[in-house]
Image (cartoon, rainbow, N blue to C red; front, side):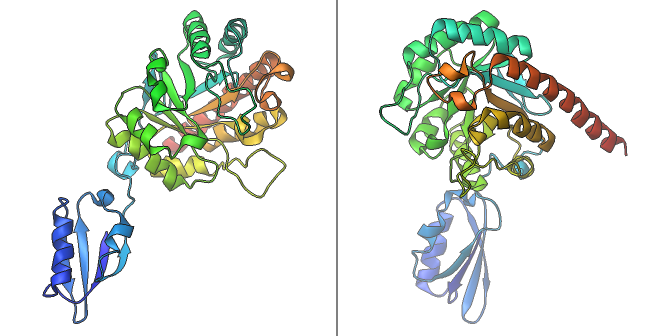
Length: 342
């Protein structure tokens, strides 16, 4: 970080600012001019809030010369992080598909879908027990009962389970959950992120509807700063002026995130599109872009689903898509190997 201040170190206000910075274990290198001084800060400047620094009357300008996220930054962690849940590895060349219904509706429904998606090649099982809905009158999920059904289905098929948390007060219900999902609406629920940072269970963090990639990484930083390095990022589409889809899938987010961070990146084409017919092309595009995995909604009877049936594939459609994903993955892998040889 670089701070431009008015005057030299002889100015008591400049020295006061330097003392304040050094109290935060950051060293200051001052380059003095006749009317201005440039302060070069060395250390973990992520602890400094730019707006707070600007409240000092002698400060003229503040610029970061490095990203404020340290733990999630590839510059400080060159190798890809591999997150493991229930014996399934994701990231670092380990591609996985997370599949299941938007919401857990019954024991029979959950177990039936689990068998189908496992047979098609999915390694992780998803299902919503807590559902954040725009309308207070819409189905809100079975909550604890839903987690029980999801856990039973996962154990039956020996598949790690993924489900969304709404509040830190519900953490005790997630004892048997393998990956805790933080939904788009909670991406900046910092109190929740701090609590998830205190435990070691993997967290799948979805990008908010109107958040930048840096904001997504800063949310990941909250979890990692608490001591939990097991974070998976999820691109699920952002809100734009386009109305023909539920959201706009930012496919460019995949290569950008792979450049900025070492964390695994998965894509959710179901929430991005809102239409089952668009899930396949978007899923294949994500694979081609280099995603570490996909999260796909699958229902045995989409037309009767209590939540998001329009964007859910039926079990047959999912099985057909998995064959195409496998074929495309083989091509992408072979291209990568050829580039390395060249």
